[in-house]
Image (tube, rainbow, N blue to C red):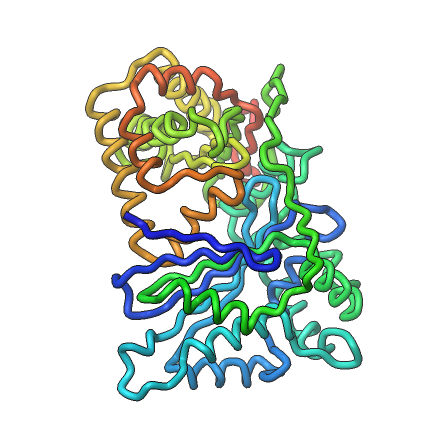
Length: 431
């Protein structure tokens, strides 16, 4: 189904996917490091600075102009948390020169530009350009502040801080607003040099390409330090925390709608064989519009504006999110807990079970239909230290039985409830 080849070059792994499906060539560069409290804000700022200028195109304007000259190529960088890792993703998409009227070396120029974003940033006096760093500090602070304005994201952030209070996973991927201003251009550049020397680098090239040609272009343009000593983060820290009491945290703000977020530990991650059963569990529980949470909390009881669950593949967590009236807190929590109990007791209808498996199958197919989605699915293996093909993944879902789902549901344990309620509401006195 997917022709995925891996080549190791000087501490960078190049993943090539040859396909005639797209008229563009996509590059996705993943830069992975274990979450580190002292660097988390610097790393977030670095992702902004890298996409703002290179040695040959030393400003955002010049960089955008260079992309326009490449038939409207696109470039962006963002951040994500994958388990205990903070990952910078740099993505670029360019037209495939086979489809252009004149035979310009678009691919070669694209490789040059991407390699500069990573290896030849815009500098002055041996550090990042002061003007760029200042501008991107403003952007990063706006990003962090925007979380407070989006109450769903804010409640999610607070849940993680409470649930993982002594684990790196509690940290916000964009860092801490209070730390942004004190980072100097020199400090950020010193950290960047450490990233280039030690971080795990994976480059995905997807399109109507030839692997041999791509490898030659990587060798030509990406001159990485020969002595790179990649500090690969620990693969699989098994979550052994046993829950004796569920932690309940209440916070009051001037909100129209209460935000109820519940965090569960599953003791299962992408690396484990039970991962497929966990995916099906989440689908039956709250992953889709036919799921128990949606039907029972939202439809039957009309208790919630929305009710759903999602899971984090590498941290082994399931999160329930729901928007409710403050006065409905106790009732909503009770019904959410009941849906989990139903699954633990094997009360899963054939319809729920079969529809969930069909939906997961469609979801995977839809995701891999897009180059970025395809690279994300394949990158799970890098983060987890596994080598599972997409075919094996889909086969794994197919083989899951109801008994497997019940077994994994019995391991799933509620850890923390965070409720953001409206100020001055006359809701339940216990809230």
